[in-house]
Image 1 (cartoon, rainbow, N blue to C red):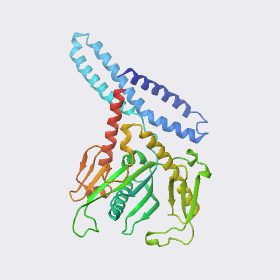
Image 2: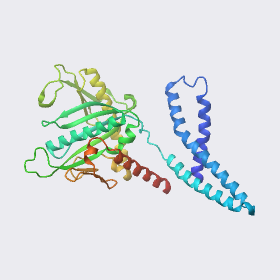
Image 3: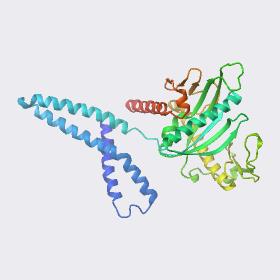
Image 4: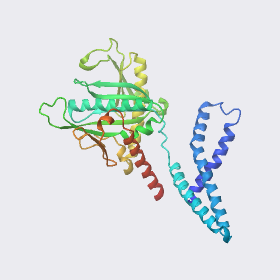
Length: 359
């Protein structure tokens, strides 16, 4: 084990003892925000310290075995004990290295998921509806709650744009690699000659901020318009100006929300989406400065700008970032995408480990 890694582990060991003392005090719950922060930190490092304790016990076993080797009658037994201790230490060292990887502070957050039709006209909008179903079915499998924040339907039943909110445990951790261009190859419902068409959608996954105040917005930099909510074909949902459109003038970001009959609730929801988009834009600006994180950018929606291809004639889905192809497109479009998401997470972890090794 590297000295730098051991120093981190020793520090966490001391920090856990400190947290135990703090959390046992009578006034520990006086400030619930601080208390929740401390309990999360305690939970995060407890497993690491526990594994480090097992590692140190294996170290002690190795030292005892080396001392036993000095006795000729105990040498064979000591050699066996030494091999076992060394193997255990190597396994625990690798495990601890993984546990020490930097955590994404947003992993436990809820998300806003945006799906937009790109190249391909009506077929792209229909594919957006398919992606919406895939993600909502996956959310159901995870036990998450889903809310439609905003939707702009196409004439054929698809979506020009749809924004959802997913609420649950570790939502961003599981969904964060879905941002980017999604390309579909299939015979559209509108195709009369059986030709395969290619179209695309973009997906953006953004962690929800805790408080709107997390981003300081000058009210004078906002233009807020109200209008009547409407569905496909201009059919009015209600007869009042309950829908809200907010434009952030410095960035040009526009958010609409019309899914609730209450103008007040639509405005609150639109503000949450706006703040999340502003923070996401800030993150992307930072990501553009780092080549390794370019894969997380949304892209333009063009056919050539994609992270994944859904090929219906061949029954396969291919993720181009990790060169993984799965031949179970029907099950995956029904929400069975855990294998794919787990593979993306594993690749990301491998990249972090490689970077840690180079440091």
